[in-house]
Image 1 (cartoon, rainbow, N blue to C red):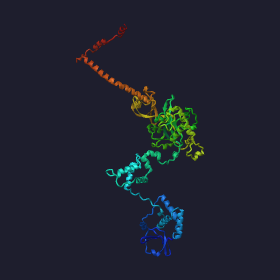
Image 2: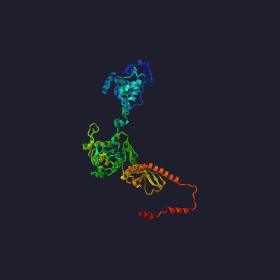
Image 3: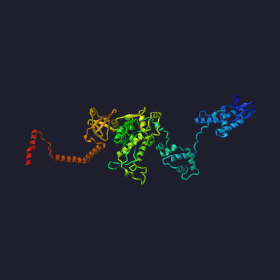
Image 4: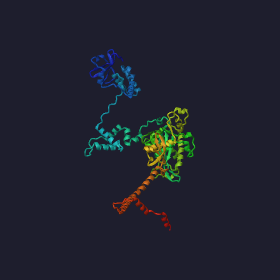
Length: 610
């Protein structure tokens, strides 16, 4: 198309024409209002036309060329231009143009009318931007019925009551479409309209959270967009958790005890088990036992149960630098928080989010599935144990705690050193260095790499750090802690000066406490020997018994005081008081009274013998 005098915009009556090309006395024009195909007309037909500028043209057409557009709109615009780009060179040749429109429609799988619409738009506006899809119009204002339906859904459907849409519809009619007498009005929306509005406006996130709660959404429905163990790029992040084992145990005499509690610390990156705790009680005590096992020599520990292993099978005697826990009371307690003094960082995960510590959850699943299939009929609990008429698995119990702990040790050794990590994201470096696909091998390789976050700690240091603490007070009588007095050399000034101090104590034996100052522990010994070797509960019971005994004697003591006062007053009442006591010759009077009261004990004794 020629560009010297074409592409002008002419107003001709009710029509707005754009001149696309001119040859001799003819001009190729397109009607910008009707958007038909361009056609050749005589120049004399448009002599009376008035040329208008582009701004006025755009204003009359009420169409803006978008300046900024999204990536998807830009892509669509370019795709539409591609459809018509092969037609533009022959737009003035009607026959050739029709053939190319048909070819483009077949090639790009669109209708010929669509191709004509794209071509007409571009020729009328001479701007590729006009081919971009129009932005969605702003959301229209809701009708009154739609507002009522939105109100009813928010009030009755998106709630913990979990009403059905049918119930919500009934409640909506009752609240918004009945007169004062409770009679339904003539005009009201149908239940189909409510269902349509619900489906059009439904958001699944709102649905799950409002009806089932945020915790259920986080646990069962939220998008799983994490990268698994890749979130932890190195060894040293331990996940802590506990579970009640699915087995009943007995004591050495064969009496049923119950189900033990298993705690474990599992590496988030390699799934390697740092250590475990198997006890009858949970809480801070079992957590303290777990930490001691994590830092223990595993080769020596296994020897106690008659299991001989090589050190590389369970080579771990350090604490992980990061500990991931849930919101259990034992993990959030101040006592366990003291472990941060060793350099450990504790990260408490949200409650009811087991997927955030999936490695330790999977550990329990694998360990229990391993021993349960071999211990059926020996106290193992089957899935039907809570059902009516199910077998009483307590009667099958025959293993002691030591037997079961040996089983658990065997399962952990298999889990660490023989279970194949099939889905682990092995790196090129691991493959080049020949790292075996076992948790112990990957852990042993990773703990020597840069970024490994392991903290070596001695057993004594760990025990002292995990001891519970309280406030003690220095007094002249010693360091007083929980009503007991302690002493140590070199603290004379503190005894005299007084003041409070932080003290760590052992609830199992009150014979010693440790003064905690400036990160160091100083041992103090018990002064009151009657409490030596006793635990806190025994001491408190002894004190309570003493207080009870004193309390019981208090009533009799009070009566005795009253009786004493009466006797003294009677005696004093019988004495004659003249009011004129003679005070001369006191020495002679005393000597006379002494002779009166003097007793010869030998004579008294001889007289008694006869």
